[in-house]
Length: 181
Image (cartoon, rainbow, N blue to C red; front, side):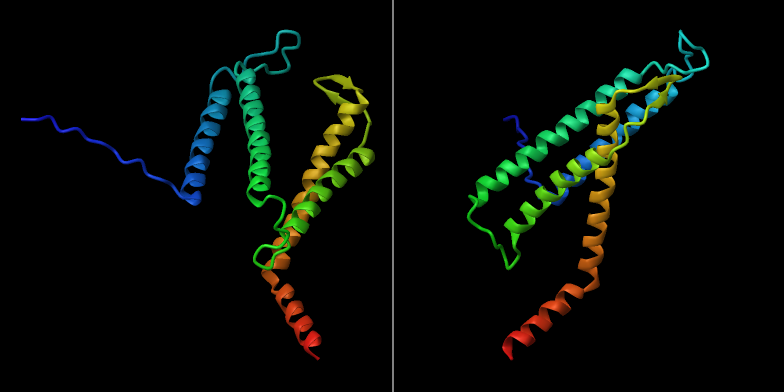
C-alpha cells in the first residue's frame, strides 16, 4: 500500500473575490481591536485627572490605525507605480475614456484641495483634555485633512450622480448629431 498524499491546487482568486476576503479580514480585525478596547479596561481612570478615562488598550488602537494608514498609503503608491508601468505613460485614451486626463485631473484636484484647505484652515486654539492646544501648523493640517475629505467626497458623489443620470450620454448624442450636420 502506498500512502496517498493530498496536493491542494492553489486557487487563483479574481479581483472581486480577493477584495471581498480582504474586506472581511479587515472588518474582523477592526471588530476585535475595538471590541477589546471597549471591553478590556476601558473605565480605568486617568492618574493625573480621575475625571478622564485612560483605557488600557489605547496604544493598541493607535498602532492598529498607524498600520492601516501606512498600509493604505503603500498600496496606493504601489498601485500608481504598477499602473504607470503597465500603461507606459503612452495610452492617454483607453476604450474612448480619456484615462490620462482623468488621472491628472484627480491629482490636480487632490493637491489643489489640500493646498486651499490648508490655507483656509482655522488656527484657532482648541481645548484638548482641559488644556488649550495652540500649534498653528497642526491645527491647520487637521482642518486641511478633514475639509479635503469633504471636498473629495462631494466630488465623488457628484461624479456618481452625473454618471447615473445619463446626462453625459445625452450630451454625447447631441454632439454627434451636431457634428454630422
